[in-house]
Length: 428
Image (cartoon, rainbow, N blue to C red; front, side, top):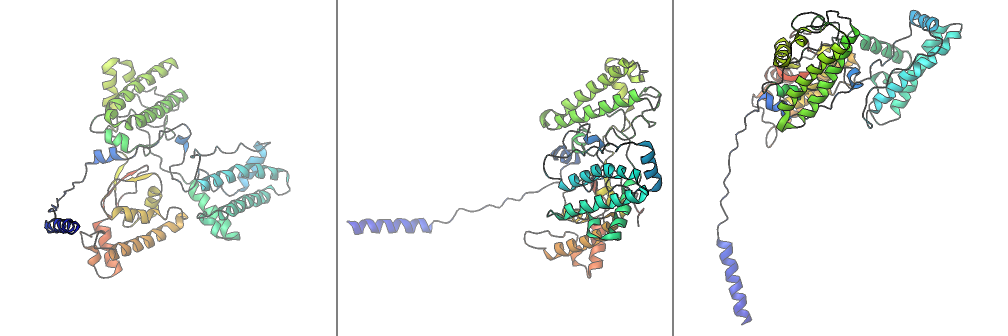
């Protein structure tokens, strides 16, 4: 009986083994590039601005504003000793998250320590020489702290003695150069279905109220915006500061609620302008032309006067193949890549990996890193890797492949940039 049962089990297993496996049907999936508005909405919204973060440098995370400190010139030391009986207040610390950003904290600590040490030189026989020794000492201490952690040190710290001092002097001169800070457009455009993608996706790139508010023709004229007519009016400037800060903060909250982002943004825009009119009236300022209207007429007036209704001033098509110093300074600041097509993310990453370098070293570094990345991409073709649809890797030598990449993949790359890039061909 046991043998008969074993025979039945073996026959059943044979029948199961003879059954053909189920047929696998491979479905094709056609992907279309998403429209730019949807792509921008898909981006993680930037954190809401604050009064502190509005003053942060547009240069990005390489250094805090004012670092490196300028070389003590005779006139500056003389003025410090003549006008200040005690150390000037240290600069405000940059707004940083509670963790990370240690290199910026070390820079801020150096800036905070320098004024107190320099003012002690005012009673010396040679205050200028003393101030310069203190300047060098503070930066040497900063470099010692840079080397005490396992991160890439500030570029000048890799040098020694007079070369280190000269490097810091040059870097300070670069940092003190006048930056092209964009104006804050006023009034802002009315939120619509056509521009809400830009409102949300380009947050953090729009200029903050520490730009030229109160000094620009957009705000200081008596056209349809109806300002006070006094460009330097402090009350008007402060009211506009508060308006822009509130609006961007509320836009951030709206963008996190994708189901109601447009409705929410429109209400924030409308109520913000109403409040601006009320605040300026309470301060006794001459009303704007649009504020003299009421209800729907007031809102329609502001909407019609908006100089940038599409919120697209930060959108740029950038040619990345030959990145000169001006373009590198822009790319090393707040920037977002809006093209997902390979190999653009890898190539842009190669360029921006050089941002921690000294500005005079960035261009050579970017050229070298681009060459390495192109060689790596071409050697990794096939299988599940990048396919090189324009066949740039099929070229002859490295120079020919580089020219192909520049023209085929790195031309007119769509990016969101806080600062406008140089005109095409400007840095050739």
